[in-house]
Amino acid sequence: MVTEACKKNHVTVNGLVAKPSKEVFPTDKITFRKDQITQIITVLDIPENRVGAKLVDMYRRNDTPAESFQHLELLKLSKQHYRKNGTGRPTKKDRRDIDEFGNEIKTDEPEDN
Image 1 (cartoon, helix red, strand yellow):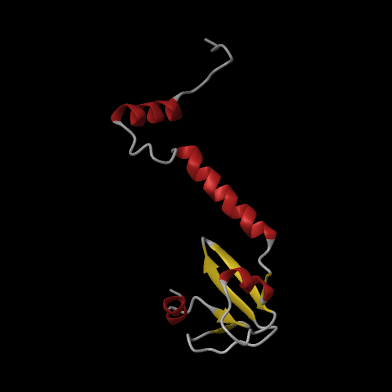
Image 2: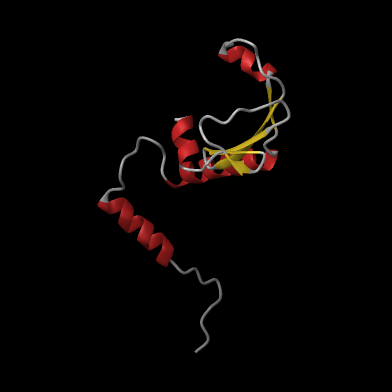
């Protein structure tokens, strides 16, 4: 998956497009796009051997701005507001109700004749 992203020029290391074989060193900044936000990871250290997933956070720091994660939450909420997950496609009646809702005009003032 990461190799594919590198081949498509979606991963940069210190502002330069990275190939899959690119070596990284401490203090390098890795930038990539995931879940519709651009994430920035700083390499703190390189482990001597392979480590488990729980220990990876000791060797990296996530420098992604908090605004990016808030924007992602807003996107998720806006999608859920329109249609709930698992409800399927709108029926013909649902579509007509949506069309009528957009065409309703509320007038609080009496018409002058």
